[in-house]
Length: 109
Image (cartoon, rainbow, N blue to C red):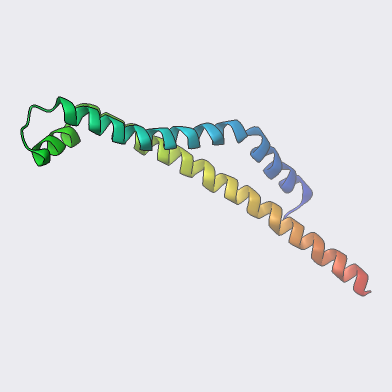
């Protein structure tokens, strides 16, 4: 059973972590876009001659792999916070449903 304390904790989590949740999402979106820019920059620096060879060079470059590692960490944090937020929201919705059911039962009697 979800009590009011659990709901308050869920609301507190959402309020207290809003900045962190937003920052994690911003970091993820930034790195998703920066990855494309980094690839283009490395593509231009490539000593290779063909387009395919330039792309391969850029994709295996250490700087590109560093961006991918950062993106992986950003996605992990964003998803962790998203799932925690979804769990908090689900607790609130379950509590609201329980409260509505209690009110309906009280009206029935």
